[in-house]
Length: 217
Image 1: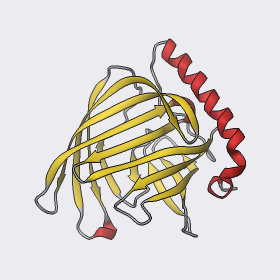
Image 2: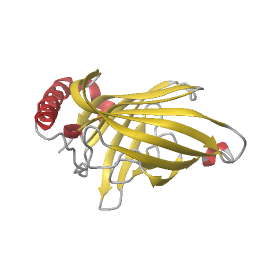
Image 3: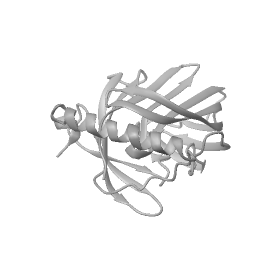
Image 4: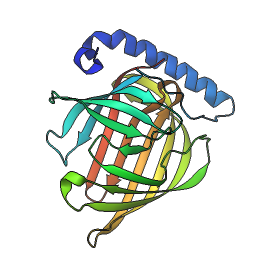
């Protein structure tokens, strides 16, 4: 049963899961704050509201449902609001997109999320993205990533204590001359097994998403 089709019926469950996530994350924060790679299971699912003014409509709901997972990849079924057909999105075990929600194809040199995560940790991230449906588009992203700390955040799914990860750097087009700054911010919640909010920013604007509902095992 699709969460996207029945999200209204799950409000009570969302509140319960949000409370559990808050308690679990608080316990982690009070201990050593080390967050391990998520133990993702088949049929885990998340419903997000995505805001991206590069596309029409600029705001939409989409659902991810895990269809297969092994030591090398997480495969998900993607359902988009207003589109009758499902598609696929593929990720590394650390939730770095390989075939992304917005149809980008990514070659990951070093991921934006690199587990285990702990407050104060810093590392480098590098990936290249192509958009086969946008012609010769080819961009290279470089970031310096820092695990900033625990932060309480509220999204449509509820209130959570999330581990905030910030990434500052640049993007550069490889198919034509173009380069500018870029920033990613991720609010990751261990009990959700994924982020509850993300924000991408550059000189051209912002792309964000917030968790609306989730069910995990």
